[in-house]
Length: 468
Image 1 (tube, helix red, strand yellow):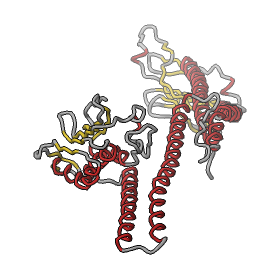
Image 2: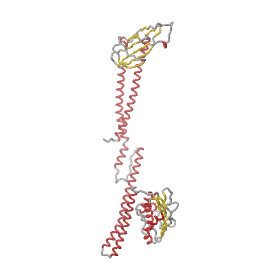
Image 3: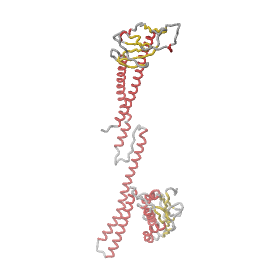
Image 4: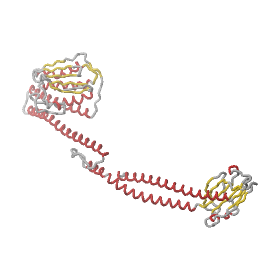
């Protein structure tokens, strides 16, 4: 089952609080237990010291125990026990009244330990090495040089154990109540804190393909959510622009195909309207083939653009002779150029060689030359050259491109209102294909008007600086 973010945050915070409460409770309990046992051991030590003062040691190394009585050592309901061993052979010197003839356990060295009491209850033992009172004034011996008594005092630990149990219950109950209260507070705080996220989710859920123009706005949006929301709005803007461009593209393609299809239909309908001679039929077929070639070129360019957009183009690297490549690209355009009385000059050196993809560079150069042939005024001239700043310059004698059209010249299917010829600016997709292929070749295209009224298309290396 998939958990909600509110549930996950609440559980995580409550779990963290549970760990904190448990650690705090353990710390308090440990300190409380240590204090109880310290007080318990101090009482046993005090009783051991009092018992040691009841032992008289004489100069002949005889010991006498004068028991003055302790109520706790004589109360059978809450018994306490002691036993004293004297040197030199650790003979028993005295036992508590309730111990009888039994012996208390002892350890090799003074220590505190837990063991069963003679009556079977759990107890705590305190074993000390102490000296008694010295009774020879004529022969004083410092305590450090005397053999110590071994004194073991034991008491039942039920009271301490009961208090520790009560402390555990108290801490557990308090921790549980505090944890439940904290869980309720955390759930409330998390719920309020996630309201902007919930509002953001609702705003996002309202966005669909028909509402890409809307932008996501949420009141009191946390600062942490601002970058992803800004990025999402940016993505929506790009999607909106993309779909708008696709709609324009579809409309432009339809327009481009409708014109030659209408012409082809008219040609065929005229041809089929009556019987034709062989020469007339041949002329009609040639006109139809011209329209078909135009449509074929348009479709090929569209497919090439689609492959570039899908990044399915592989770029080769091999030496290319620029002069020969330009000549090959110009050859199919020669008849159209001669029909318009255009002069073409290839100023490249036959030795000019570059390393690039020849097929893609051929498409770029062919489209630039075709654009020049189509829009240069009749009787004009076209020149191709190269300089230290550019890979290639394609110059035509004009007319110039309208200033408002220059920034959008390489857009797909862009058409300007002003005319560069009697047909008007009609760039189609040839220049758009140039703009799409140049980055693959490491180039940047730039179009500019010249003071003499001519137009120059330049191809720069991507790393070079180009101005107008």
